[in-house]
Image: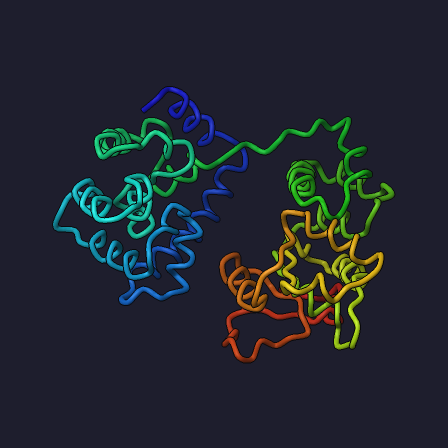
Length: 333
């Protein structure tokens, strides 16, 4: 294994915040692995796999199912299974090896993050298998922790002197900056947090997102909120929603907003320009049908959904759905 990857593993394993990231990744992989070991594998699970490994998009559902069946067999060595499956499809050795990891992450090393580009052939994979078996000397306990270390990037360090200024200027639409500042605030002492809490913020949601101890990701049903059971769409209702979200004791953060694909045809005048700015944000998208995307994201990230729709045709008993009026200080999600 190349030295830069060795150094990254050592640094990641000793970094503040890594074990929290590893815990979340371990929980997510546990759900995914459990679904991939079921027979038959559900179509929703295959969708998650394709999203996790984009290189599998060229394969049909049937080809992916077949690949999973072969990879689950334990009567052959991992490299033999990977070589056989990759020889029968257009997927690369790295993609098939990562699929094997997702199926059985306790017994097969990941091919993800920094190592992925290094695995271009089955010989590369064999060498990686040999290296991965000695991960203990880097402070890595198992293959799931190994993947977390390969993916982990240390949060940006924000200087205390500039923190107040950055908080005062950040917009509630700037998800990446809010993530960085939330991590920075979480490391402060109680007194330092109190001092920053007295600042005049540009938006109430910013204060809520940065200073709430607990958080829950949410998916906003954009078109539903914009119409809000009215005959005409009003984009200002999205702004009103953020004010409601700021009243929650738990930070409703991070957020995604999903609009129906035809949203551009339902807004006119100056609102069209505001919509275009909103759609340029990475956490905002259009999809058709929007309900499918909303439900998929909610399940993938254990997000609550904010909508007036109850999604009764989709079997969503496992998803928390909140009406805007239900968001208040006492909300527990």
